[in-house]
Image (tube, rainbow, N blue to C red; front, side, top):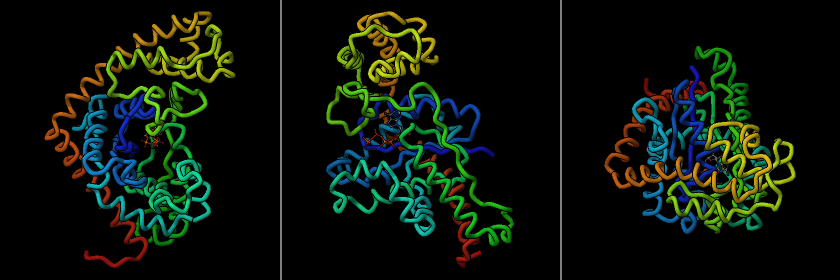
Length: 346
Ligand code: AQP
């Protein structure tokens, strides 16, 4: 069977990049796959508490990401929505995979280099190990597809390397235990749509990100219609009118970004957007983008707000999801222990 896993960190400021790069594809894939969508709270704590906000903020943010999943249209009865820390097997398998992954592989991870910056001695061991925990999140469900934004591609590739090495290192035992030639599938990153890398509204060369200090750099999923309109109107552009073909966007990162956002929200390719708006000035295009963004995002924000207030319901979705996720994860851990020779009660 094909199984989808993906996660979002509860680190606040859920934004349009998370929505168009990841959540929109989560919603689509539920039509054709069995899906697990996870609020990855163990990942959130890899930065200092002052950055993730402390206990009250974490609780609020876990519920907010859950509300975003449900408000976007993921069905918590058909699919599994849960938070990572409720399924202990994620951390358990991560330890095993720590012993499979090589230091040299982790040293190549660009996200760690970016997030650690110059002060490497002072970041948590967890931040360095983040990609191995992510590999565990995916492999503990033996997921085959991982919908993510472009920035997560390298981590999914590392997951494939770890899975492959496990399969190779224990191939004889995997066969002896009756699992055939390989135990872990090699998961595919699913990076699709016109907005796999949404850029900052202030600087078309920087990714739209939760941690950008400028709130004007991103559209938050909780923004109301006025905030959305103001941010789009203030978004950086260049003085030229819109081109009529995609190649005209190449040297123009801000224009490319706004056209990509429009295309993703409208559910059409960039070429169609340019066929419609080629030659138009940005002021006119932005008005259309405001109308489209508000029509798609304002109801989402309202529903998120309503759900975030209903903590009993949101917590029950997470608990139910975790119960169902744990069944699959426990089966994997049992198999991994048998494959590796760890004695257990039968
Ligand atoms: N700008 C983006 N464009 C497209 N997709 C994006 N994603 C994140 N930013 C963009 C995708 O959203 C999913 C969840 O991301 P995450 O919360 O797990 O972590 P992140 O990538 O670290 O998010 P941020 O906003 O970039 O946080 P900071 O500021 O901490 O670096 C992933 O699938 C991701 O690809």
